[in-house]
Image (cartoon, rainbow, N blue to C red; front, side, top):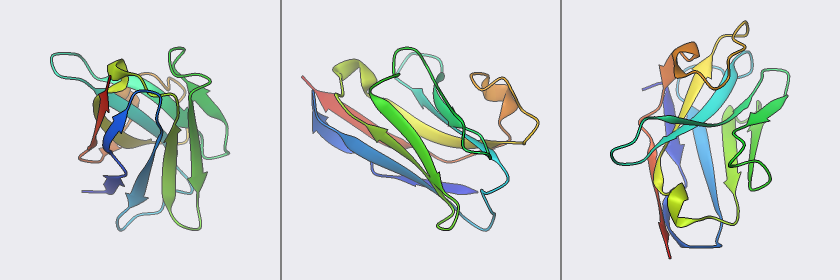
Length: 123
């Protein structure tokens, strides 16, 4: 497994969580990184992406509430999630795409995936 996600858990609506995606045996510094999520019975959904140069992109429904960041020295990508809603509950996955990738919302652009971390939001 190239990445290990952590930071998921149970939180009340309106609360915050910070997810981490740590690389295992590979460097993240030259990869575009993304976060996706998948709720039961639903398709995998784009959440946010950050390029190897540090530019970030968000799904419209998460813009303003979620922040993606990266620390290349720690070989880790983060997703800060604020003002969480029950509909944000899902398994959250991080993934890596090559530098040439431009379609951030397309999961087929990403070559390597983590196993995911569960986020549960109670109302």
